[in-house]
Length: 163
Ligand SMILES: Nc1ncnc2c1ncn2[C@@H]1O[C@H](COP(=O)(O)OP(=O)(O)O)[C@@H](O)[C@H]1O
Ligand SMILES: [Mg+2]
Image (tube, rainbow, N blue to C red; front, side, top):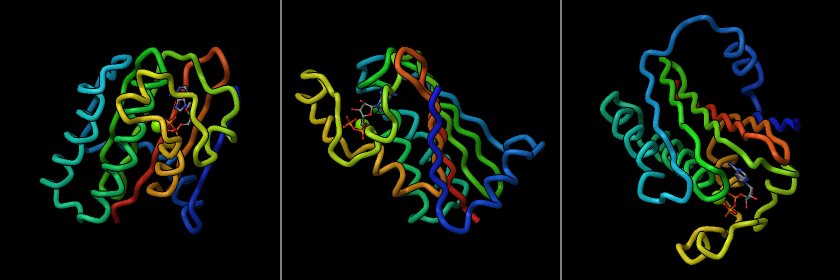
């Protein structure tokens, strides 16, 4: 398995702290993301956004969460056999985990390059497949973690701090 980490400057300690955290999330939201279902994909990110808006999260952070989680949902629908989006809301951050059923990413560094895409014709006809999803997730997250390999499930985790 290959592992990729991006941690924005200044967030290293906070991410380390999160890994050893024992407290439960205040709210958990889980959504199934079926393969190639672009109506269902998008539901998780939009409901998460609604929830966080009700909780009073500021609009710039909301926008970042919505963009990053939408791109990740679309990737599960477009590139995998389906998976689940697990959102966990803490008082200081939103942690979102996408776990799918494979077939995995062969070269994560290559997948992170803007414009790189293996999207098939169906996905392209629907307007996805510009190869900007992962770079956009990175841009909008405080930290991002991918664990994957060819022929394996993919795990993508996002961390966005709200305070
Ligand atoms: N969950 C996933 N499972 C398998 N491959 C993925 C997954 N997410 C991303 N990828 C790979 O990374 C590439 C780049 O993703 P992205 O930047 O979102 O661009 P796009 O989705 O437009 O192809 C995809 O084309 C695909 O090869
Ligand atoms: Mg994408």
